[in-house]
Length: 167
Image 1 (cartoon, rainbow, N blue to C red):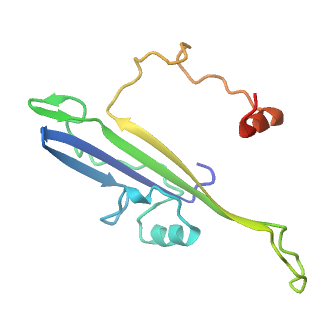
Image 2 (tube, helix red, strand yellow; image 1 turned 120 degrees about the vertical axis):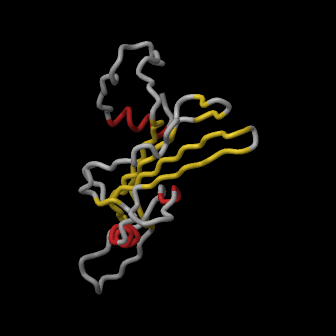
Image 3 (spheres, rainbow, N blue to C red; image 1 turned 90 degrees about the vertical axis):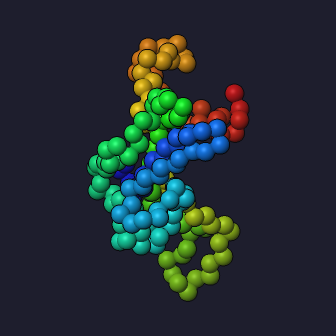
């Protein structure tokens, strides 16, 4: 992602061993043990910098990350009395953080400044996928052909209608 500062990836696989027991395998992209799925939340700039140094998060320059082969063996079929579920993968890209204040701070530090409001904006993007599950043969819900539908750029009027709940 163009504005990503860092990435974090987790995958987990649950295998039912019997009616009352299961095995859970969790993997993460972190170089340190114990980094869990709770990292898929909004993180501040200082936390991102700290966890990038500690190699908990992947740097923005990362273009590939591999799950060790065999870690989720048997994820998509029945194995005798054992039922295996597909493994779930979740990826988070952490974007920039911004502080927005109104009215903006005056350039002259001696000038009085009484902000009416301020907001901190932390951007992130997430994706989730099921590993080993081929959905290519499923019919599309909209009845259309394969491939993404063409994207129409919304007008400002259409955008405002969507935000305000109008038709």
